[in-house]
Length: 293
Image (spheres, rainbow, N blue to C red):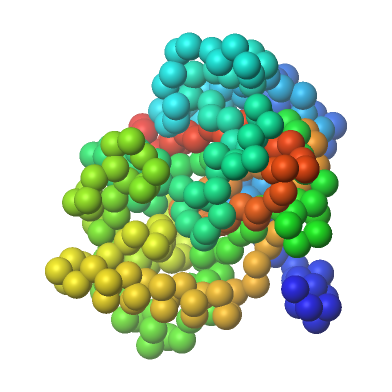
């Protein structure tokens, strides 16, 4: 990154990444504070609560109390004896290299995407369901491969839509995409499972944004020309990248980062796993407002 690029990023005032509930413990929130947390998340798309000290079980129980029961993630029951039991619980995934691996398990997340997990296979949910992901930084590398602080990057897909030309907005409002399970999923299949419009209306705020999903999405009508369809999606995303600033969350140990997948795309940035340890606990949940509607 050049100095000018860094300077532009420093000047960029994003609605994403607001710090919330300073000096509060997520295990000890009132019902009103839980409601305020969700309100802030719908408003800002990405929020962070810092200086937390949680076990995987505490993170899961906070999620149930705040967002509801529809938690999506690993369903293993047996603990790994080589990993701290504090980092393990049903539905909680461990990203990074907790055993000192030199090939981090989350390399698949180093490309731009919107988390989908099991959403394409849950019939009653749209692709732009209120699917929230939480990532808790237990151990944080001091830097990435670029020598800069360890970050996760986000693009505001509501802003991305607003920055398109009116003609392009109108064109995209008539196009839908096929979505399928993530390629790393054990249940992934070649046939896409869901159709969703590229222009998405947020379930709470009513604002329009783009829902692109990932590089595997194919426009309806191009399913017999998958490479052409994927190129269409890639070209659209390149336009988004040229017009929409990137928000970079700089990690601190103890951060719990929340993001609403119906509003943002994101990617992790690589780090040197031969030098540094990274342990991040990941958990996804569909908000109960979605389930009850």
